[in-house]
Image 1 (cartoon, rainbow, N blue to C red):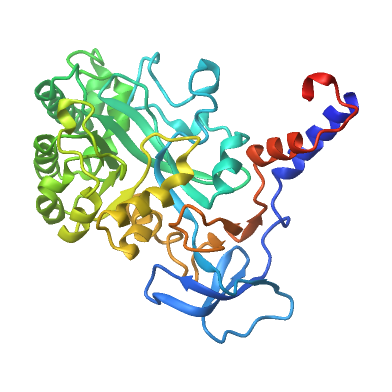
Image 2 (image 1 turned 30 degrees about the horizontal axis):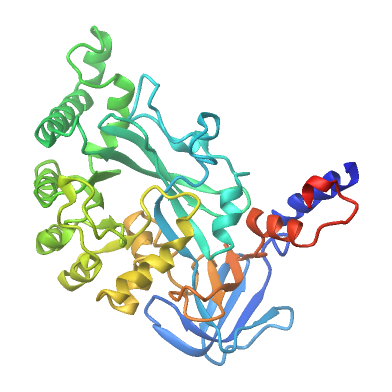
Length: 418
């Protein structure tokens, strides 16, 4: 039994390692390359990866002699997918308090909460999601009943869970009273602007009197009121979306809206205001009065109006990788195929500020590349090769290890295992 446990530990350790130690030169040849960029779709194309980045993309590219060749003939090559609202790295088991680091619920601050300090790079959910073609995600705070939940992080699903600071997240929920929530939001933004102009006077005085938030939270929101950091605001009703549009104009905010099942009702206004949204493409039934207008046509109508949007399972951890299936569901209800792929690659990259390095298969971009054995939006398709920042990772996760462990049991193992 001891020998079996030691072997299991070794297997787990090896499974977390990439296919190759460090970046290498790789040529992915012969596939249908969907660049999601200016080059469009390249039939029988080649993607040349070197030093973690894409060196060349196109047809008839000369492959270096030292390159490892991946034959993608008959396959589809796309950027690794991105889920725009997850708890990856922040939650292991949702019902156990000690494995969740996504909430500042019991802390004396909220907006100042930064999820980066609670990220766990050893979580099994990195490999579980990466094995299904997900290479980027937004780790978002949540679980707080306060207006501001804290700062999120844009994470790369590689060994080490590379993270950069993301937007401040807020939830329009004040005891179910939207009017109170919008008033509170405006009061806080006005107080933050005043505090930013007179910080020294405030700190020299009694400090905290008169403010609805702590000074720590006020400091965290200064870049937001200056338009230097994005504010991600979760809401539902069309009426509240209109309030958000007015708020952006009034305070000159860099705003992104989350959830918004009724966004289709005000799609033209969102497009005119240039406010991007992150939607749940599965939302088709109202679960409360604020989402009566939920429809599976939301994505299609947003696309028609010219709204930039991303598709994501809101707050997902264990199933965040299903973004391609949710995008496919949107296609079944009117969204264009190209629009669906954009919603899980280049669009979230633009929304969350990483489009200069991720989201398209173009020269100079970080090599997040996935080779699929079929249509990547089809539920029966699977990724065959997964590259994150130029390093290939085996399609191994805790799920596959458990499968392999119990499919063929050692006859000498204790009876309980049989």
